[in-house]
Image: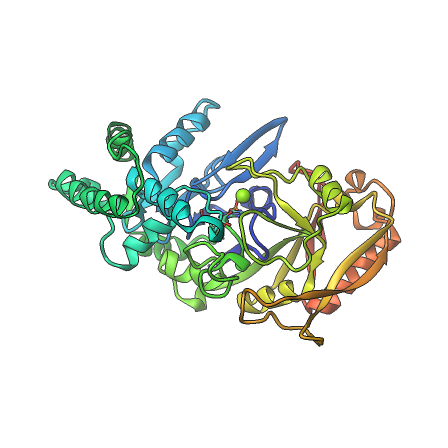
Length: 419
Ligand code: IMO
Ligand code: MG
């Protein structure tokens, strides 16, 4: 069986939660392979809404196994809170989640370091979600981190203290005033909570599962936030692209099946960094309002702009996308003209490539489409879609060279057209 991957092709917040929830019905297992509680995957069904941070979006499907993979960074405190919230609805979380022993732990001091680093950067700050993601991956790569499996070791407390002391020295160097022990009791309590879950050697577990079942790998963030290929340094600290699913779960590239690439019909970004099609006018304001573009994790207003096909073609290439999924088309229902960026102008020359330098001045070149001026949210079949909308879809498929298989026209599970 195959590992199918679903991931965001833009700067995050593409609507991954909804799609994984829709697709999860077809998969006996769902796995997160990178990121941590910086993610906020929103699910809406049967009149209820949830935001998932570290838990895979298959959690509400009966009989689905949800794997928190090796590549994830896990904050025990947030994870416990998330589990307790979901358990209130009667979901047996401990039966439905397994956690990789090799996933790294986010300590309370990692979160403080995140804040201290950002404060020290002043205007040049990344706009991090302040969940401790960067400092935890830093410790992982510099070989100082603590892993989930370590909580079972008799000397866990000593190892925790050693890492904490290291962080306290770093915080002092940054001149950041805080109480590094404020959340220690809550952390230890949450660590005990995690001991009640099945902790697995994820690479064996996943490969064993793949012998009889297909798995859906759920990406967090988006490809333009990838640490290698995103708009560095304005990125997150993990591999958000398809290749990250291999390292993050311990599977070989030959096991990958479908790669579902999710994008919104327009663009948003939270935090700092380049955004060539960003709108600072009423149109941007209208997109934010209609799309309710406010962070699910931080509540920050998201920056909004027209769809950027240059960046999208780049991430389709990086991921080897086999199937495209377009979200929030309904948010464009009331626009007379819809624009998409089809090339960049850099130093007076037109290009269809994303430039190396994050600080390059880019002027977007747009192709315009007539709006459909109709309410898409009632459509359930392809045949019900307006002709102008179909024209818009055809153009994108041709430009990107990949079929759009799913069109989402509303937040609910049912507001989905399969093609
Ligand atoms: P989901 O999975 C949107 C952004 C932050 C910041 C940068 C680095 O919900 O799509 P970090 O906390 O990772 O060090 O922040 O990345 N960012 C996201 N933006 N959606 C996300 O996740 C994000 N996770 C991180 O705003 O600019
Ligand atoms: Mg988000």
